[in-house]
Amino acid sequence: MTCFDESSTTSGYARYLAAKTTVDDRALNRQVLAELCRLMPAGAPRVLEVGAGLGTMVARLLDWGVVGAGEYVLLDADRQLLDGSRQWLRDWAAARGLRSDMLPDGLQVGDLRVRLVHAELGRFLEAAHGELADVLIANAVLDLVDVPAVLPGLLGLLVPGGAYWFTINYDGESIFAPSHRCDERVMRAYHRDMDERIRYGRPAGESRTGRHLFHHLRDAGAPALAAGSSDWVVYPAPDGNYPADEAYFLQSILNTIRDALRNRQDRVEPADLADWLAVRCGQLAAGELVYVAHQLDFVGRSPG
Ligand SMILES: C[S@@+](CC[C@H](N)C(=O)[O-])C[C@H]1O[C@@H](n2cnc3c(N)ncnc32)[C@H](O)[C@@H]1O
Image 1 (cartoon, rainbow, N blue to C red):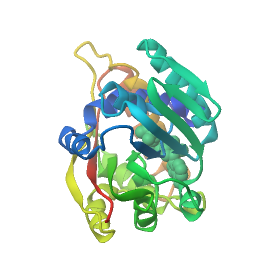
Image 2 (image 1 turned 45 degrees about the vertical axis):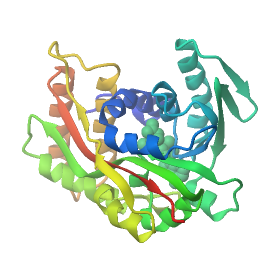
Image 3 (image 1 turned 180 degrees about the horizontal axis):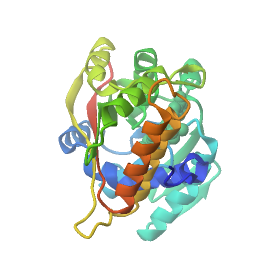
Image 4 (image 1 turned 135 degrees about the vertical axis):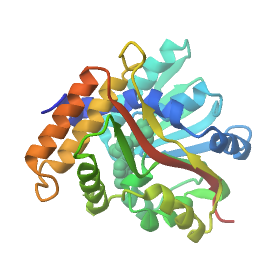
């Protein structure tokens, strides 16, 4: 059973990231964000966001008054997504009456210069790179990379004492309600798939990234100054409708689990997986499905 297949295409993935915006808006830990604001240099800082996707975070930070001037670099390995980010950000700015102008390598939004950099993170860290950043951001990304391998290089992209803000780091717990007899098996198999994932020829994340970050950050000489939960909590309104495009967000989550497990028949019996997906899709269509994913946010300073 599939809800939608579109989510595995680039345009489907872009819609998923756009749909994720309102879910992240609720989830981002406000105490950790307050600490980031305290660490944010005045004036026109240079911000680097890795795995930036469509650029929804720079839009949010402009909205929330966290950034306003300076340079904001969006780095991502997905060229089509980055190309799409220009138009997405232009539309976003236009909807708020903000002036934006296309630039050869990005766009100007008000006083903020947004620059797009197409690069795979591991290769980017291995290559020589230019100016260091004052602030480094990774949202829903560190659980997709080999953190102990990339963290020292990542922190090396910051000026000494520069601020990092690592948010929406998955931490080994997904809850779907109402419960289903296969929940435990499905989630165990899904977590195992996360732990064994290879992307761009490298190990690509693990299912308990959140809790492990405390020690990885400390070992890298950059212990968190603040940390807190940023759980995704998605539920229908009393009338059974999901807010904004969050039904699509949930469909994408179900499709991600389906895609991860459909070729791993050693982990969940195909009939059980099919039943689990059919029941979940039915609950989604009926406006009954609740989804919670446990995640953690961190803020701190680079060594030195
Ligand atoms: C879950 S999405 C999050 C996107 C964005 N940060 C957001 O929250 O909307 C993960 C993003 O990281 C990018 N990504 C994953 N692994 C990467 C890598 N090794 N190097 C660069 N980008 C990567 C993907 O292309 C994708 O855009």
